[in-house]
Image (tube, rainbow, N blue to C red; front, side, top):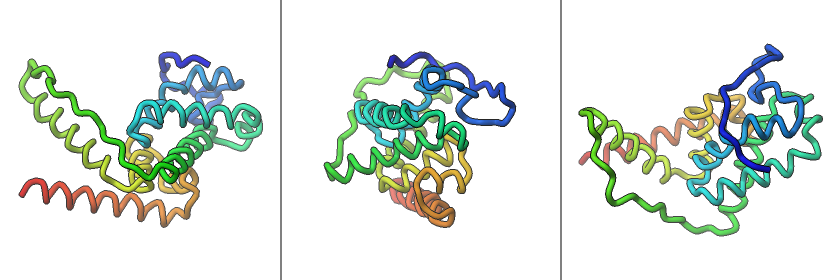
Length: 182
């Protein structure tokens, strides 16, 4: 199975499905693998763990692809598998994985980019400090654009719990941001 460049989402069925209307497992992997890799990286914060999580999720999806496709959103199933794999790996290892920071970033040519890059870097560093369930909820809400009901489905919890994860994560991020500014 080779990852290919992601194509824009197309919904030929007209039902708004996130899987792009893939009729076969191969089509689904071809159309969604890059987006799934990105999602997994945001959840795991480690490229190898992200690849492993996506691979495990797709291996689990393969024998039941048609069944999952018939029930509804294939991406929700795969996202949940990725999150579950990440949580399982985290529980097994229970260790922090340091993230390397590039030492010599090239200077931005145009003004204004410095602040945007710095802000994005600070935001990513702060998101990385969140507990796993809150980080997953924030990624699902603000990167994947899922509703709280969809987040609850992916995380396997009640919708109120999904709302709580996002709310507490944002509160924690705001608090840390204010502390850093002092």
